[in-house]
Image 1 (cartoon, rainbow, N blue to C red):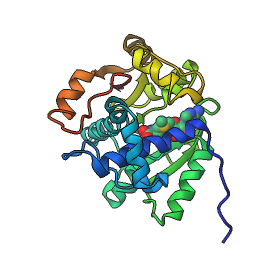
Image 2: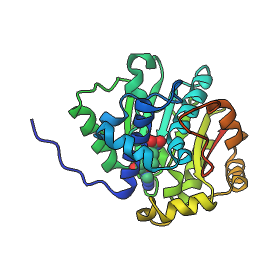
Image 3: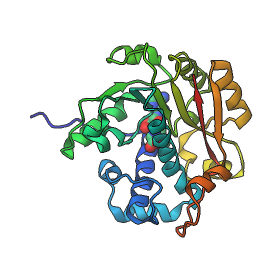
Image 4: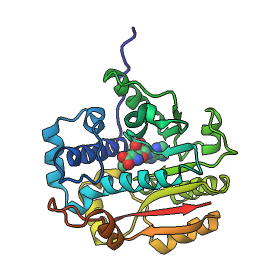
Length: 275
Ligand SMILES: C[S@@+](CC[C@H](N)C(=O)[O-])C[C@H]1O[C@@H](n2cnc3c(N)ncnc32)[C@H](O)[C@@H]1O
């Protein structure tokens, strides 16, 4: 068998490893009840447990919770949307392990992981090295959002554009140009009625600027939106029922009475919208 080709990961690709590390560290040592359980995260990232726990200790509780909350909130919304959708499109999937964790439990839900081609190939190699079996319902869709339209990328798969879908776009918009964000939102809003998107965006505030100057300093210029700007973009694209998950609301729903210090993030905001 030919040996796997060595793929160099860029700084943006490395953010997917860091996100998985924080989910894995929470799974290992976060308080019960876990906000999100991802037993595959550290295996996929190839990171020793101790390194992930140390990483968790180096970031603030609000930063650590970002990657945990967004996955939990999204999978909650997906579960609530399941009677309307049987296609799940994960944009900038990184090391998202939803399909691998669900396995046969996916039932009739087809999952489309859309990701920058080199990183997707890295993940596929990693999955094979670990001996994990990708369920038949999982489809890999290579796409650089700055270069290829989602329409074109998904046309190469068996994605059905005439059926409603659930879309997640977590931890990605800050790395894209505003035009690429608008282009993807236009595609998402043109899905059939009942389709839904959950996405994150960075709000420019003191914490975000601190992060940009610190751990995210190697990632170039980031794209920020205010909540009002994001609402405007979603409305202009054609979405309705736009709901922002405020930090107060997230604390009330997901972070009440925790002893591990996790609190809702103030920097990365979550919003959902329905077609
Ligand atoms: C912070 S990670 C988030 C990964 C995953 N959604 C999660 O929540 O763990 C950002 C992801 O966006 C992907 N990404 C960034 N720019 C991209 C682009 N232009 N096209 C496709 N994917 C991109 C990166 O490769 C990376 O996997």
